[in-house]
Picture (cartoon, helix red, strand yellow):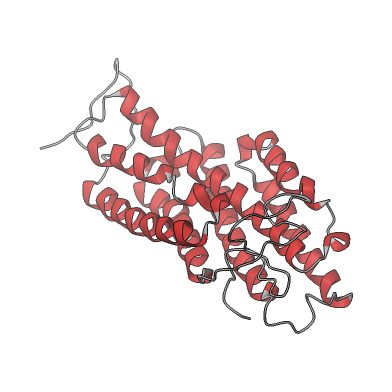
Length: 268
């Protein structure tokens, strides 16, 4: 019978890690990562690489092994580190999504933060608010996205007004869904941290799966759901991969068919 092991008389785990639960989530992340890898290669949407370099895979491999090695310090650190790190990378990609939506509808003037600085600003905010898992930064990001939608709806551009080639509303709704899921996870982590080592969250494994891993897996599913493979044949002079840069090869944008991000998320 497997029992908790101590590390120099100190117990790293407050519970015995469940192998079936860890394997189930490992398989879930393997499937979603494989799907994202195929789509990323076909659409060449390289800024979604963080969904492919999935820290959850390494984290849950560690969890699977940890069932019989609860006294191993490096294994404990490894699985915790990667499970904590992956959502931060997801958040960075979500920040980029808003910037690309803004570019796709030519709505830079309606953004509270210059498009060029959008991702940098919120990633920096995540770093500053790391101890509360980026709750404040992500909350401000959602507010920024909502204000952008209100402004672009009131003061439309040619690209945003009833244009089927620019499904920006559907993209924003997907962005909101992913943002709320990340925010739920961030709030859970902040509460877990505030409870301390002897708190309920760290003593019960189900809280991690329900409020951390499940929301992050859902983020990957929502993102993949909005994917739709579309090949553009001409680069756009504005560029979608950087401020003012010219897109090369197969671009998500083209002069006569601006599809924005994710190689043309599904139509609204």
